[in-house]
Image (cartoon, rainbow, N blue to C red; front, top):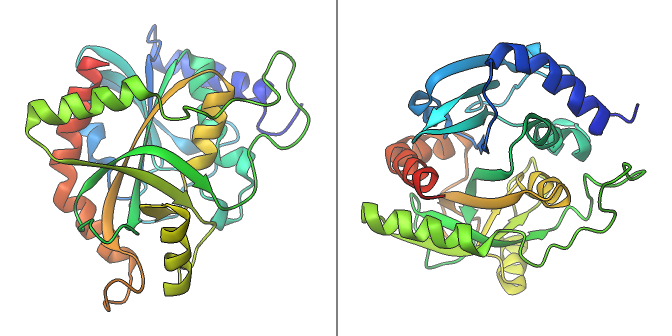
Length: 274
């Protein structure tokens, strides 16, 4: 059996199903650093610690709870992954994207991703939310590397990796809530060190608006599986070289905490409209 492949995902899904009853998730949600408060909005939740799911490692990064919560938000069944696995922890990209395989095996057709990101666009401010319109994979690696699975797409089209209609739904949801959303390009670097000022200048030249260390493998996997994708970056700080303040993970968590209620309201409204 291929590590973290389709068979492994079905095995993990088979362990999860008895724990969630008859629920079939419509939307899978991955929560980034400090954004885990959304789990409190899940109605009739079934909570499964990651260490009970085959092939899921424990989560060791602050701001990631390490649990799967299945229930309803706005009347729709959701599978909320509170915490993710990162390549900078030493995990292969196939594992960082494995929860998406599992969500798909459980029945999810849509993926909503979120992350904490540094602002590369000098017009951005800490605490703003950005609709991800496209991404730059600057790890130059893919979770799809290796033998292809029978029946899966070998070369998935990434032209509209972030579904245009779902992006429109996010803006519509924000309008109803009178929230201002940015829009932009997310760049993934491998980390775990924050970017140098020279790297941030490079990213801006390449067209990036925000930078982080996650998300892209999950989106790549979702698109290969035929899932629709929407995503939000919480701009937690301006990247190195824009401001003189040293970057620190505690700052990331403090900013996400300050916008958590806005983020949760946006996601609830998005789900109701999606």
